[in-house]
Length: 428
Ligand SMILES: [Zn+2]
Image (tube, rainbow, N blue to C red):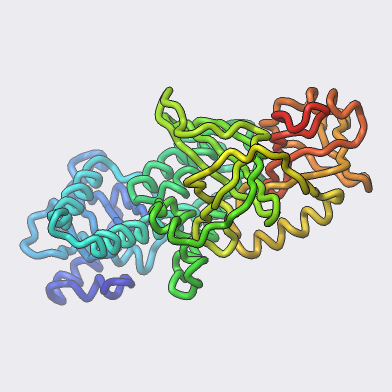
């Protein structure tokens, strides 16, 4: 197994080649030296013209595969060894970058070569293979995050959204659609993005990197959550194997949105007896309708099956039966302090909890200058999410007085989804 530059240097065919590599390491004729966490590459110029022809050399760090355009008979050649020496002794010479075209074709050839015939490979092997691919993606992600940390967020923002988009594309290739989505959202923030938002997203991603590296130490449930954050689809059969939670479920909030060509819908349910929330997430392509309608304020009886995890939230509801009776027992927070305390507890179970459902009572919307806020009975303040568009409706329904509402809380801000009005629960 290859894990350090020394392991790679040990692959040198003989002492003479290693010595030649050492000389090349000191040479100033390297035009480009780059890496993406998995591959390391360099262009070594032949002659005095720095823009002239160059030897193209690359090494896959995880497997010790050396590819070079030079005429040496053996691999690794001196060029490849020189690159490894840079990794060992002069990392500041390596820039984290998108691979140039010739490296991409080398990567493509190398990946194609190791790809086995799929129909004879057992599912376990495919899973292992996918995990290996994800691990290399996580390693690349770490390099990238450390690079951003080194440059600083302001400098990273100044480079524009392409950096984030490129990161998202690489992560998608590495079968890490979850983290890729984080980068895509960062890219879409544009000039509205604040350093705090970006810092938080990057911190979550770094936490993911650390957790992935320690995944052998995690409990089974934490491991499941890690894979869910990575974006690995949990099989429906596995979810249905979890014991279901029978209850009378009220549809408290519905969020519709779009990511790339996919439309998504988040439906929040709350169990009458259990007082637990369950989140149903659906996707649909283009204009196609979602499989089932979940009208706000309707209720359903039946068993909800949660996705595995230490803080189960996302769920499926395979056989809902229309409730046909009133729903009681909506009790919410009257104090933001209590709400935050419970959010913290939930976060301790699952650090990647993005949207935390909260039902608030006796809260009062108010406008403080440009700030649109919600106040609790004690006058504590929470800001609304910048995407929230219905503030003035909320203000009108409240008439300036205390009201009840259901919202998603992201740790900082609230996105109201429904409001209790005289007509009952209405979209917020
Ligand atoms: Zn070479």
